[in-house]
Length: 531
Picture 1 (cartoon, one colour):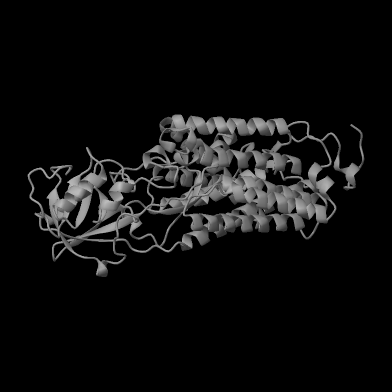
Picture 2 (picture 1 turned 90 degrees about the vertical axis):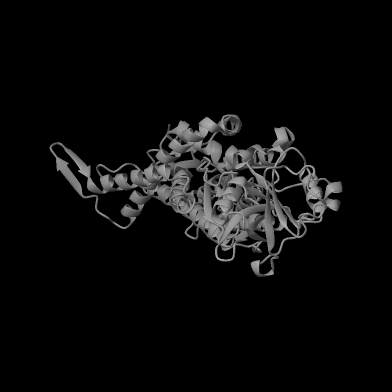
């Protein structure tokens, strides 16, 4: 169990936001039309933002050449036309200058490689005056098959609002998950404090709980996470399948735990059936079948972006909830150490590693997007040259499609994403705050409420900075200070910081959480006993 959790947690701190400048190539022959993906540089090419304002051009096929030189073509022979050539051999600016010499009004470069935003040097950008864009070579072949050589093209880039409704849904989903995870952890602690005895055949609520109580173990835990992330960077092609299998098992188990808790809360009968000397629960059997089925369906259809995100988010919410309930931090000191180390971890692997990796790649972003997706340190996303190819991605993020990104969906379906780590890590502190409310018998749950609000504000700030900077942000950079400082301030104002820092009134022997001193010595109900 511990090893499985370590592998999962080692890769859940992966979150990024993608930004790419994409446009639409509208191809028609008078009676038929079809749209294809384009990638362009908005600072280099001025493209209309609507089809009605886009200028139509006759398309000339020059894919038999890379157009680094005129190659026998006469000056102004392509006057006012759009021309498509092959990518390679020379710089984009050189191709554009030759196209301009021939009189072309638009340059399309067909690519058999993954496509990023076309970049030219400063000198070249001053000389290039025609729109320049990349398109998939397979798209051009498809257009030829549909329209033959009678093609008229228009280029336009629909405006995409900076604030997409998907971000609001992501915000609500994250706050719901963290709030419910913290609430469940506190409820389980209250049940344990009350001495509730599980009925026959029912597992103890804390039977699988793991507690982090030693600073040295926390440090070792983070070091192992760093090692796992580096291994994922170098051996992604193989380890991604290991993570996928573990996620299927862990999410199915977590979903069962969540659904079983809901059934218990609403008073649903277990429907025990006896068979000789043994008995089995029909409810448990049914839940097991449902959870395994959902995990298997996700595993089989994990690359079907159009709808599988719903199932991934469902399994992800269950995984995060169960994690926050199962993993407990024994005191605020451990919370500070763990969250601070993970903040450094997040910032280092996002912002510092590009200085040490080839081509300035961020290890965190590269692993989060997957090498096949071509993640870059600057937040740019490479569009695959083959639209039918699916690349394996780590199942460690919540994903919600961007509703306004209609044009971008031609290139690749766009998502607002948030890593599980940005829910789980602050969520562990929220869970600790709720358990502390239980320990001090605080009916208003002041610590739990204030930490949840701090998490919500921190997440809003994260999204706001992302939208303003147009770059993916390490969310822990904002969530950790907001939650830690708020919790500490509440404890200081209530003059309970010493107790809040020390946490439980007993020292933990090991992960089984056997106490040396019972709760009775701290004023809790119970008989005082000596060890």
